[in-house]
Image 1 (cartoon, rainbow, N blue to C red):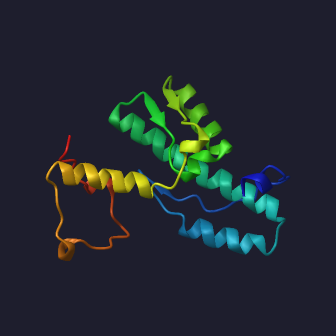
Image 2 (cartoon, rainbow, N blue to C red):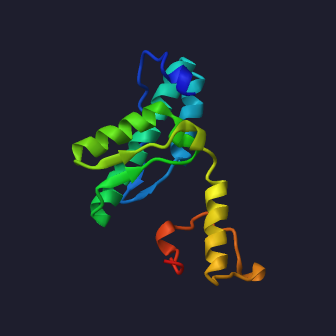
Image 3 (cartoon, rainbow, N blue to C red):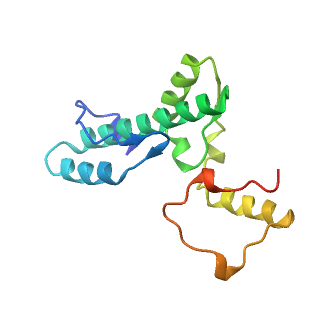
Length: 149
């Protein structure tokens, strides 16, 4: 997608859904799928990437302001995308904040990070019985008690 986005000539308006620090990609995904039937694929990729990343940058900036932080780090698989790194860096520069971008070889799926957090929790004595665990698609990071810090 990143490579195709670089070939784009036009931006196609797509839904931008941010409320506070909550964002939704469902309408964006549907609109991009529809746009792919009517527009050049490169333009759709560019528009999807710019819109989704602008949403991520906005929420990151809001979180930094709320938490009074002056640094941000981009990690995970999507962190390997050069454009997202550029956008995050611009936002941090405008806030006089430090931006950290690990080498691409460390940009992997967050599954290993989640597993490592689970290991830290287990070592600290935090356990969840299997029957008490649930799939929660609406799970919010601010609902998680950090018991190991």
